[in-house]
Amino acid sequence: MPTRQPPPEIVPFTVKRRQRRRHDIHLSSRPVASAMPSSTTPNHVYSAAEWKRQPTSADVLFGFNLPYRAPQNAFGAYCWRWRLWFESTFALSMLQPWEKVLIMCIVNSVLILLFIGILCYLPSHITAITKRGMYYLLGTEGADRGLTETLSMFAGSLGLRSGGAGGEL
Image 1 (cartoon, helix red, strand yellow):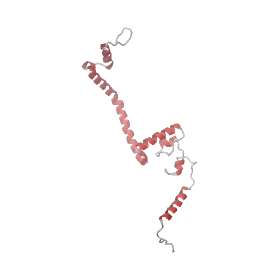
Image 2 (cartoon, rainbow, N blue to C red):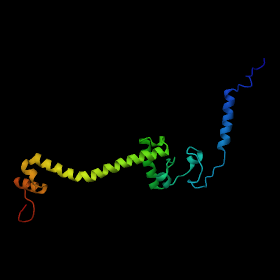
Image 3 (spheres, one colour):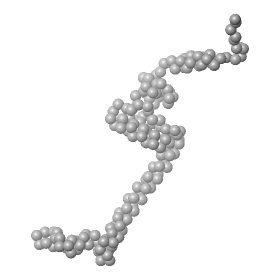
Image 4 (cartoon, rainbow, N blue to C red):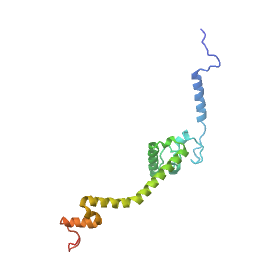
């Protein structure tokens, strides 16, 4: 009984897969220039050479793409772990480099404005809160005086003395 062959224009799927595997092996068996510095190596982000490469701390701190491995030194490894946590928390690894720059500019601008607001507004707000607290605790006489004067009068009314040998408040 003769075996049935498909028409010549139809190639079985398994043959295509074998040819594709041979083609992939051929492409991945190219020599890799691993001795070249990382900034000049023309490797794709997902290539085997990039996977095997040992990054430097500068790659972790200033590179757009996060390296796969941590650097050898402790500071670089710490920065790599922190950046990995940060990028995975905010899904920055899914963005293009220009989107990362845009997002980080917006986030840094908002944080800078927040810190400026805290530094400018917080000291006056703390004094207002202490005055309000003195008013709630001691009534109108506590709100008119300063904090130290009010506390010393409050301690004197309780019979507590502070200060030198004379017992002055």
